[in-house]
Amino acid sequence: MAARNLAILTRQFSTSNAKHALVKTPIPVYGIEGRYSAALFSAANSKDSLEACEKDLVTLSKTMKTDPRLAEFLLDPSVKKGLKVDGLTGACKTLGFNELTKNLLLALADNNRVSYIDAVAGSYATLMAAHRGEVVCTVTTAKPLEASMQTEVEGALNGFLKANQKALINYAIDPSIVGGMVVSIGDKFCDMSMSSKLNKYSELIKGAA
Image (cartoon, rainbow, N blue to C red):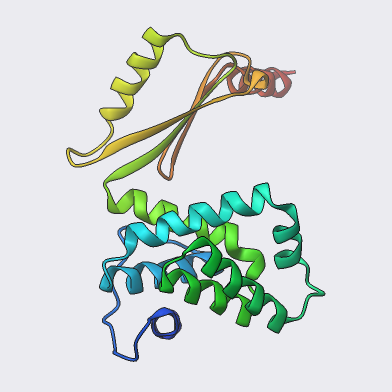
C-alpha cells in the first residue's frame, strides 16, 4: 500500500504523463512528510532536478519565515483550498520554482497538507544530504568549544563514518547539560553529558537509600 501511494504521488508530481520507475531513497524517511519528500525525490531524480527542487524548498521555507503574511495565508485552515492553490501558483511563478516543486506544493494544497511544507522540506533536505554522502551530526555542549577541541571532535566523528561519507557538523549550546557533550550522528545518539551522569548517580543513591 505504501509503495502504491508513493507511486501515485510520484506521478502526481511529474510534469508529463509518462510512467517513471520509483527511485529508492538513499535512506528511509517516515510519516506524511516522508511520503511526499520520497515521491518528490523519485520524480526529481528522473528529471535531473534534485538540486533545483532542494533549492526551491529552501527558498520557500526562508520566504515563509520572512513573510509572515504568506505563512499565515498558507497555514490558515479557514482559507479555502482553491485560494491556497491560486496563492501557491502565483508564489511559484514569482519565485521561479521548478515545475516539480510547484506540483508538489499544489498536491499538498489539494490534499489539505499545506501545514506539512516545512516538514517536507526538512525531510527532502535529509534525503539530499544522504544522496551526497553527507551525515548530519549535532554536537551539543554547555558552552562553545575552543577551535582545538572542535578539531578533535570532527576527527572523532569522521572515524564513525564510511569512506564515502562526509560529516555535516552542527554545534549547539545547552547550559543545562552542565558539562561533557551530547552527540548525534545521523540516527544514532550518545549522551556523554555531565547532567546525565549526575542523574544516573542520583538514581543509584535513591535506590540505595
